[in-house]
Image (cartoon, rainbow, N blue to C red; front, side, top):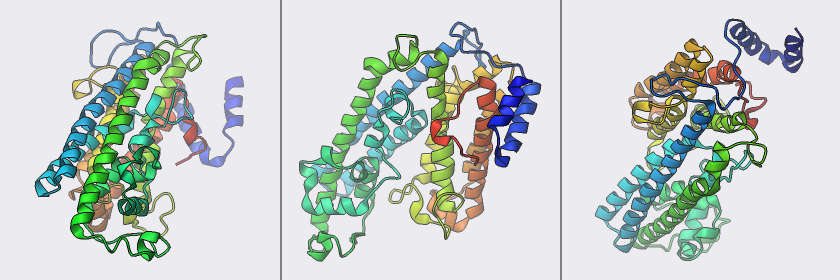
Length: 409
């Protein structure tokens, strides 16, 4: 009785009452979730050896590290291709550079759904914001990039550039945008001084190739740093919590940090990548806002979402082949929430089904010609995120990420 009263005091706003009563009903017919006991046996949904919550954390850590290592390899190959393009910029080297970029960005977009630890926000234990060093989107300053093309500051100073004029989005613009215009206004010296207009097409292409190669080198450096941070301290701290651990005092604290990464699908995918361009969330007041679609130059926004979903499934279902291994669905099964475990799988599959139904290759074209199909992806994503914010958190005794506290959407 006392527990119910306390819950009622906490959930005061009417907007939360529906969520509360739904969660209360679920609790009435679902076994109470176990406390964070590192020795508690849990069986994998897809067979195999018993796992514990500690083993789930360990599996997630291995998954994130493997993803970071895969990106090091892809970023290295991208750097080689972009160096070759800078040395001899032509149609052949450009095509190879673009393909290497796509391969690397596919790997990174998988990792976008594994943002905990060094790649995660510095507001979380062990977070170092390394994601922003590699891909800071939606932060991107095209005019800033164009000003550096004119000044050739990329030849010596890329490590000191702000994140919005380097990283994967900058490489995308430099490799894929073929226009001769600039977005800089007359207030910019490259416009008022006429230096942008003075660039010949050949010189502009050569500088873009050189700038892209320099940024690729920076991306590779930060990818190496991400792996180093995982291998040289963070993995051990995440997987060996205890009183002497300054970051994680319990297995549940470690598990909460891993779980926070699952909510990339809420704030970044649902609200930012889909909601803002559609005018559902954010500051898009005259939808559609096509300039807010993620991939403005390579036309791969839908492809990015597909790979974000892969990262989500690795955490929620398992990081092995065909998403086998320990995932949060297994922890739901372990507390007797079989229906919730299946719902976690089905609702992520629902997003994939909605994405498959978008016939256009990219979201810009899809929003323009078939807006309802993109809205269906947003709806399917919201179905999952509503479940994550209620049943999933409640049944596993997990916490909502601090960045989402107070978010009723």
